[in-house]
Length: 136
Image 1 (tube, one colour):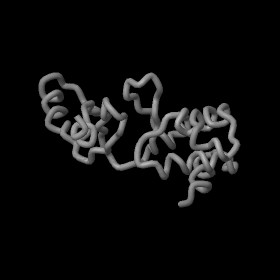
Image 2: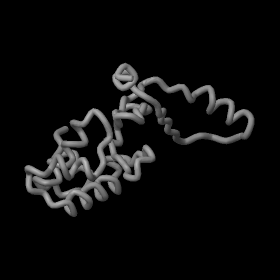
Image 3: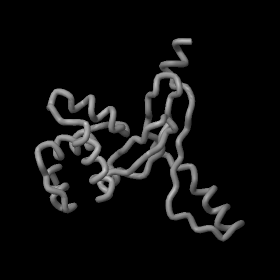
C-alpha cells in the first residue's frame, strides 16, 4: 500500500505535504523528531506548524508511535514496525535498532511473582557506539 493510500485508509486526507511528511517516517531507518522533520522539509517549503499538526494527527491515528530517549524532545517511528528495541549512543546520538527481545524471561518472572500481565514494553540501551569508542 502506498503512503497516500495508507493515510486515506486511516481517515486522513492525503495532502501532498502530509504524504511527504509521512514518507519521511516510512523511509527513515531510525525514529525522527519534529525538529528533524522540519529540517528535512525545509526545501519543500512546509511550515513548522504543518509538521507539528501532521505529527500529532499521525500519532492520534496510530500511524506513528512516540519514543522518548530523554533528549528533551520526543521522536516518532512507524507504529507497525516489527517488534524491536533501541541502542542510543550518548556521544554522537546515533540510534541502532535491536531485533532481539530479551524481556521475555523478565516478563514471565514478573507474572509469576507479582501476577502482573504485561501488555507492552520498551527497552532502550544507552552507551557509546563502536565508531565513537574507536575514536577515543
